[in-house]
Every structure is written in structure tokens, then in C-alpha cells.
Image (cartoon, rainbow, N blue to C red; front, top):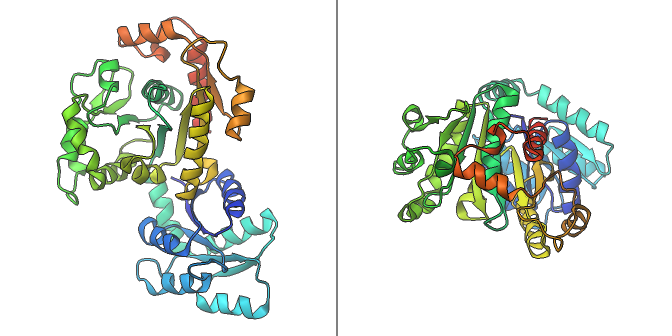
Length: 380
């Protein structure tokens, strides 16, 4: 898992631009537009470095830095102040408040990268511990959409198998949808109670020893941790603490974990998505759904997810001449669509009927190639 940088800045454009640049350099980005939320994220996420603006409406950057330095849990977190205030007195106050470096906006990307790397290197204890964590933890890949019925579960299933095929590494597929799970039926997995067993435990209980009993090996080579399809099990959607415990453990068990999170920003998704290293956002080529998806992405950015974490996937489920084209969809979405799936209703039906994922069917298909392309994109 990459080192994490928390950006606290009330300027949305700065958050997006700097966040994308840093994610391209391999960092995991968290973001906040308010000081209060930024402090909460610092105390909860323990970032490897904080990039901090001074002029934040609710709490000044100086006060945020002092608060971080007086908290034993965050007192050693490196802080770089990144602000338009350029007077000597401003710099002195920032450094006295606890900043490790002070950069004046606008700064060239090379200067910003150099300062970040320099500050991280000067924090050997944190860098060393982060390196250990990175060696032990795998990548979390969330699959979400603005509404249901788009094909998230089919995509998550085939993607997990192809990631395993291409990487040759341990891969887990799970669906955080108690009472609505369909992956178990699609794969003909008999035991779909694994997730429920973990959710039944009391919050705070060490669940690490339970995973050998609940992870099921699939013939494709992946492991599964699946939700029940019994509607009565929907009661577990309120067990947010347990979901977060599971998310904390899964990256220790596999190089890659694909999470089918279903639609919308449910309480589960609101808690889990910030933990994901990559977020696949599925949409269909209809004006209403693309508008919904654009709003979903905006909400995710406001909640602190860096823009560079997103991979947008356009899924055509039906052949129709009245759907939007790829170019029209991009224009309405106001962002690039990274992968498109062409409609193959017959192939999808046969795959479900025979419990054989599309990527494993013997005949070659354009859809299988599209899953391979998507897996390559995720693994990059």
C-alpha cells in the first residue's frame, strides 16, 4: 500500500490538481476542505504526511498544526504548509506551530515533490514503519455505482479473476451486500455465510483468526468472502464497525481484494470507500445515470477521496440506438471514461446460467478482452 498524504485545503481546485499529481507519483491521497474534518482524518487515518493550507475558514492551518503536535498519536506526523501567504512572519509562525517545511503557492510540481520526499526521508521512523506496512498490505479495489442494476457484481467477479490471472498473486473477491449477495449464486458457491459470521462478532473482537474458516477457494484460483442472498440478512447493513474491521484485515491476506459495494453512498460505502486504493465507478450510457454518477464522484471528492483514485467504467447492457455514445457520455460526465463494455446479453446470460464467469468461458470474446484491458489498467 502506498504512503498516504492528507491534503487540508479549502480550495477544491488545489485539492484536485495536487491530489492527481501526487497520486501519479504513487501516493495515496486523502483530502479535506475543512480544518475540523482534516483533524478528524489525521487522528483516524494516521497519514504519512500532511499538506496543510494556512487560510482555512473554520480553523487556521497554524491551529491545526499545533493540535497535531500536541496529540501523542499524531505528534510525529510530518507537516508541510502549502499556502499563498509569503511574508516572513507567516513562515516563522508556521514553522513555530510545528510545520517541517513551508512552501509558497504557486509552486512548481518538481519543488513540491522534492520537499515531500525530503520531509519523508527526514522522518525515518515513520518512513520505515510505512515501508513495513506497504510490504505486508495489499491493494483494496472498490466497485461502486450511483444506482443498482448496472452490473457491478459481474464486473467485480470477472475483474478479480483476471487480476489473479495477470498478477499471479493471491486475490480475494468479496461483496459487502448482506441480504443482497448474488456473486455466490453466480459462481455456484454453496457457503455464502462467511461474511455474516464475521459481522456477527462484537465490535473490537480480534477477527484475524476467523478468516481461514470463512474464505472459500474458487476453482478460478481466487478466494471469496461472500454475502448471503437471504433478504433477512439485510439487518447487518448497520454493522459499520465490523465492516471496517474486515476491511482492515483483508489487505493482510491477499495482494489484491476486490470489493463489490453495490450502489450509492450507503453508510457502509461511506465508511469503506475512503479505505480503498482504487475505486471503479460503473455507469450506463443514459443521461439520468450519468448525471447521478457525476454527483456521486463530486460527493466522493468532498469526502476526501483523491480524484486520481477513480476508474470510470461505462457498461452497455443492452443493444440500443437511443443510448449515448462514448463521447457523449464523457461530455456529460465531464471526465474521461477509462473503460467501456459493449453489450453481450446472450453471453452474459449463458455465463450466469452455467456458473462460468465470462473471463473463464472457452470461447474468445470482445468482452473477455475488455476485462483483460480493465485488469491491466487496475494493475498499473
